[in-house]
Length: 309
Length: 302
Image (cartoon, rainbow over all chains, first blue to last red; front, top):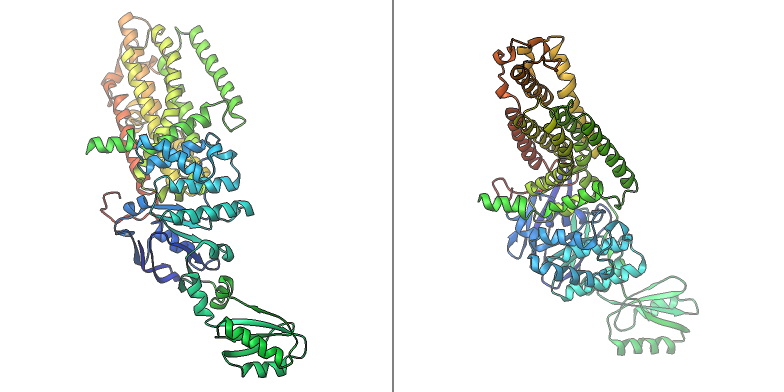
């Protein structure tokens, strides 16, 4: 379990992270969302024991990042947003080097290296020099490096940056698989729809403050408590909007774009069918009705202002 | 405790991958650097030339002069091998990956040092061939003196390596480390002696002022053997440095620094300085803009 407690980081007069707290359980895939400069990387680097918090701490399976950083390092796999690899070694040598650092017993190393290479789809490149790998493959190698010691917590800072769509899809599947393996995964990314696909928890950060935290569905529900129905009508909708606003289970009705009426609705599907029937019987020429469900991007845009530290 | 430290730093130090990396970078013709093969062939041609010249003139080339030549050459090579050792990790952004792993700063520094020493070790071993040929034939050199000079040469190289690592740990750019190391060596070995000497040729003064200068030590070792040989065989010394003292007055035996104090004391000093530089380097690894490796004071891994 990872407990982040009032983690705060100040650089001179600038507060990069303002005392954020959250808890993650094994199997959680946590999407860390925020604009550039919001404090994601600083938070991740503090948890990775690379930056000393000004205040607060984080505890991973009982090991405190401030009191026992070496113990924490043994349990984490950290993949920075920008990283370099040793070009002049072979893929298996690179992994063997990190396996040695993490004290994976000599006898098990070969097996461990083979399995992480298979997991990251790099088996064919085992004997290739690192410099001969494409950007996507190097990204996967860095992830393989994070996995050689079977870490409890994976910190992936923008892991998909610079990857082509296929590589992104593969990485997404791989992260989901790691979650299924019971690891805690923290992923920061700008590509919100991707995060929503495989993260079961998200946190939205702006100016170092955690604005929202929890399962994607919960955050979306909190931001948009009612269902929103969009009705496309073929005649002037102003009069109709007034009528709809009086109908049962309708919280509000407003004019949308292109002659649409946006209805905030609290009823069930049965009620929705009744609403549609009422609209038609009132003489409205209904061309389409659809549910407008909010997604992570909507929530993000609604919560944040784009302000930077 | 000592055994654990030895195992951590030497036997099971993961950073020994540096030995493989140095071998690939500098001793492999098929490695990534396309110029590597050509440079290696040129080096081998130069080496073969040196060996042939020594074989041809084995009676007149002192092994200590060869050791001096080896020291000059490798003292320039060592900073080139190591200037990027730590600063390069920062520039390449591979540093974070190491810092976030459970490896100590001392392991990193010692691993880098050993990698370079392994590469230099190959060069030192190769140099032993002409040195041995010369030592067998050149009558004015005593075998123990040659060993003494060799020991001094190796320890001086260790010091240069550790000094380069220290600079590499302290600065942000590899080239700055290279410049700082070469600049320091030139200042301490050439510029400072020239200023200090200031035309003063008094032997007592120069011996004291340059007591730690490796090349002065080589010269003194050479002179002592040359003088002793001249005395034993009643011949004139070939050394221009000792001509003024021969044939009868062994004034440097009466000087401030006795002959016994040349060679090993300097070697031990350089060994100590090498350890100090490595310790200093590992203590200052946090000196960079984008990382703070924090371990509480007094922590067992600090």
